[in-house]
Image (tube, rainbow, N blue to C red):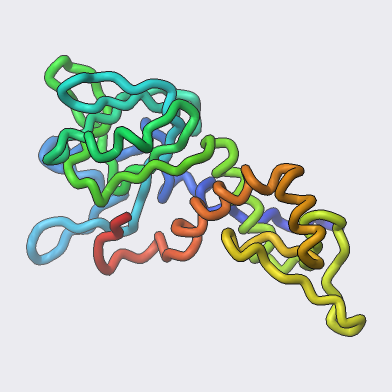
Length: 219
């Protein structure tokens, strides 16, 4: 019997969530027709995309520069060229957290290094969990969406309407189900406190249609 196909996790999609090497060049350098369509007034995105990476360092006194590791392990620089030069994000920046950049493009800086330039604060977001945790949360959501039976996140008991076994979702992440308050408290101590942040972070991505472009996304 053939194995059932594993559902694709949204953040594992290499087109809509490319690594740095898969990002398009800035349009003024070259139009990447994988990401842009020719239209009446020039070019517009054909789909949405977002770069995600884990913060390994932050530098810069005048302007915030993030050193970020992508899904392939490549470390690149994200330069914040916003009006406040990234200062509003400083309290959120922490090594090990994940940064997401909407519509990121490969940019050549004045020192001839290549990274990502961010000019709009609505295009960047810091998510308080590691990239590994965020990817796992994305995988967990994909598995549940395929129609797998719901089980308590603590004791593993399966939901069964005929036996009047109803599970309730964590009110924060709205993903992990529990039999009741006792199971939820045990799971929180056992690790859901960490997983919950990742599931909250990934929900913004899973609630959107990344394959059809009508208007720009923003955080």
